[in-house]
Length: 308
Image (tube, rainbow, N blue to C red; front, side):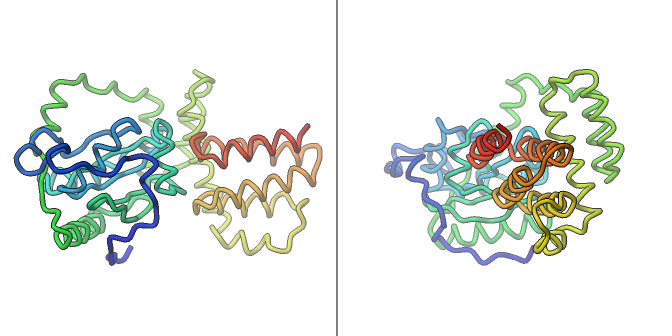
């Protein structure tokens, strides 16, 4: 990821989620009264307006993540803490607040966007090394300073909140085992741990979604990524292997609609075991993308129509 060149002309419209920012007296203030605003906070659709108003005085970085995937970025939270309140990190769960994700035109999680003086600035998608995240944050602070936004928020608030709130419960043992395997890039071991978790509890939605993601990683690594899309370009819809490999690559690249359309075409063109294989793969994609994405609801309806 190269160091970005940012400007204040964002590509999305936040007006559906937040009213025009109030004068400084009615919004959370910086430096002084900003002590009431923590460095890191979870944001919902109900509180998003205050976050936009805060951006009039303090640079805001918004992380849209999925709780069913890896959750919020520990790297970004560490950078926020290290910068000592020079920017506010607002974290948004895509499943809990789908309208915010739609406003930012989120195509993949995590997605990170800045807000300065009420204007959104797209930053990056996916996970990146700490050094590159710091480069992005430095550029956001530079742009914010040019716009006269140099306030700060409280350094102590996150620790105080941590003391006041009960600690999060530890991960179930098999989930923890799977995450440790993912960290060392042993995806086969991670998949095995998630399968054992589902054997213990078939209703474990997080294990279902995580297993689908891990299996996707293994398949795309074997198929060569987006090269599979080119390989399937002239393949008939009945070529299940070619089109499912291409759809895997599209999902991994955040091209959800293209993948859904491709697999739906296979479902319509096939029968028997081939159709069932395509149907199962599409259902796995729904788990990966999540119900918050409107494309999932449309694809579910299309799948039902194709099958029945």
